[in-house]
Image 1: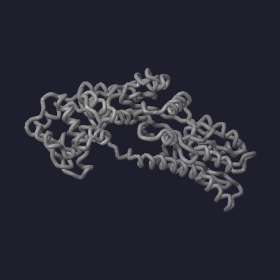
Image 2 (image 1 turned 90 degrees about the horizontal axis):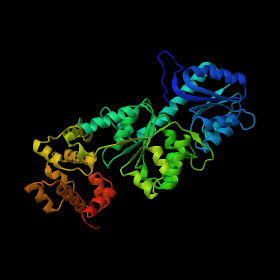
Image 3 (image 1 turned 90 degrees about the vertical axis):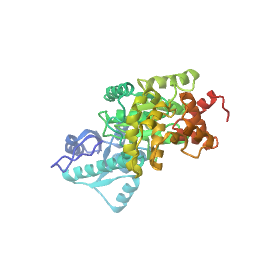
Image 4 (image 1 turned 60 degrees about the horizontal axis):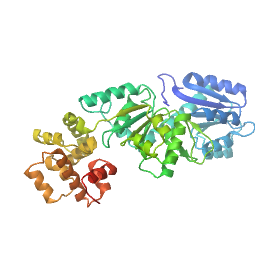
Length: 453
């Protein structure tokens, strides 16, 4: 939804907003519909609370113009029910008999404004403008809390000119124009969230929210409430209305949430926790995984029907070792963007140092390279030992770097990972974070070398 005010038009236009008018008087419904319809995407009308509830089961609504004096269930009772079910649409109440007690009750129920009959068209448009502006600001504030507005990747979010990156860019540009569900696959640290943001920015819905959620970081009950909402708060599906919901590490979803997600993909509706009513949603789903979901389907860990729903389009992100020719561009980009953010001067990377970076296999991919540049900016220089010295290292490792870096890439990678593990006393979670890889990837590498712990 966009609350855009046209020049010279105090009423404003909201080309994506849907408004529901609820009034038992046909003449009032017609008056409100005629005043608002030219300025919004759609106006729905209902003559009772029951008709309004039926429409809300079928449509996402940004704003209700709701008469208090309705036959049967009155407007305030309907508003209380909607809030209890997790429907957070803006509401402007309409009444011919306003008093202080009614106003207080309306505010407590969740109304944003009240209109006193009789009113003029300008009053209706003013209340509509303020309500839709509140909705826009609420979403913007949520996005700012997630620090999305501070993310400024270049162009389509990808850096490099290698064949691998050009192929990825072409795939993202081609898929961004359609609303199909996309599954991003690739190792940890390859930039799957950046690719998801590129899909969003290149899509026709770039002005709508981009909402990321990591499916591996929360307990199932917490994640369910975060995704679908509760009686007291909107879920991320609703927050992302009209935009993109990015489900990172989707393979970590427990079975119950896999079933719930499948239902959303099939019905385009969500049901808040504890509610008996569904909320229509218009959201593009982009999911990501760092492991083969097909193997999880075979083992019974992941639902086959959900896998095929997510895999309408699959885009695989290449590991950094497959496009090492992009390392100089990536280093320059990270120095340019991180130095001002950290408040430090940029560093120079010599040809010898760049050659060393291009030898290394980067098990943590682009994320590990970014972490290296950030640490180097803080200390003011980059050299071959920087890979080994993000924290105090055993002296043997330091001597290896000074006397000559190993030329065998597998040996180089092994020494680096084991040095990081030693520096944190074997804490694999902390080591994986420093390396920019998942703990599962780290454990697999260590197991391959016959290490225990």
